[in-house]
Image 1 (cartoon, rainbow, N blue to C red):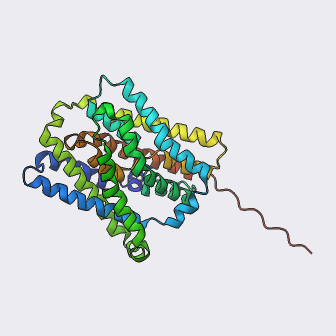
Image 2 (cartoon, rainbow, N blue to C red; image 1 turned 90 degrees about the vertical axis):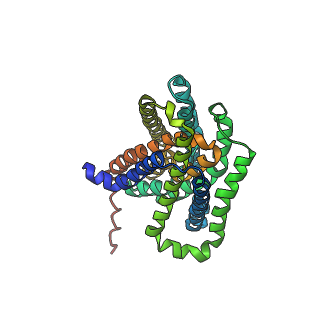
Image 3 (tube, one colour; image 1 turned 45 degrees about the vertical axis):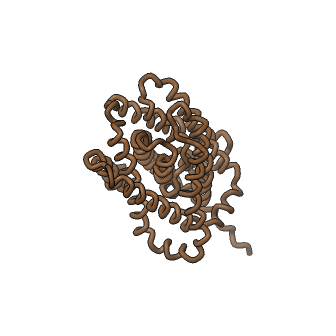
Length: 335
């Protein structure tokens, strides 16, 4: 597949450049003094709106129906919240002497995040997988992650300077679960309007994330977090992100085949079970970690996000090239 077509599939260029540009702006013009509380207030509003829109767009019926495929959903959740953390613990323990504390915490934070929704469904569709199950798996992963991610942060990241506490869990409920729940309640009224404006609202999604990234990196720049970061550490985290994804992709593929899932279900398990959500992760990091550390903590997630897009786009095309099963021949007309 030509590289230009691959890039057009994953929308790599515009969004990645926007993220890089946002980090550059934060490095040169961080929010200081009177601008800091304004930036934090804007982030709160943006994240509230972001999760309200998620709730308004998600079909409750689709989630309930998809849960019936419990074997598939269980494997997705196990990969997302068990396999990933186990692999992450092994990698960070093996390289603890080479990774700065914030980047090691960031790698583990990637491991405890829920799956993506939009790209998991998109790649499953391209690969001709079980799209309804992907919709359910990714959605349930995000719902479970709102509770399980902060709990896993508290259990696994205590040695990495995590700011987890009961207050952090309360903040997650107020800033993420509350707007999500409001979106679900108001969905019968606002859902159709939102569905008709997907393109416009996608800019709201991405704009919210960019605003949170700016605020997070501003705090880390003002606090001088980046003064002890070097290129070697950043390259190392990039390699570890790639290794982490490769291990999980291989494990989910092998487990799907060993347990006798169909190819369509395997595709869903591989894509939903190997991806991590930038959209959920950055707002959560903003709540769970000390302000000055957030910029460095989310760097492994931003790198992982781009790696997973390229890897999964290539894998989706490979699945899509498999032969289409022949339709059964019609019964012969009887005399």
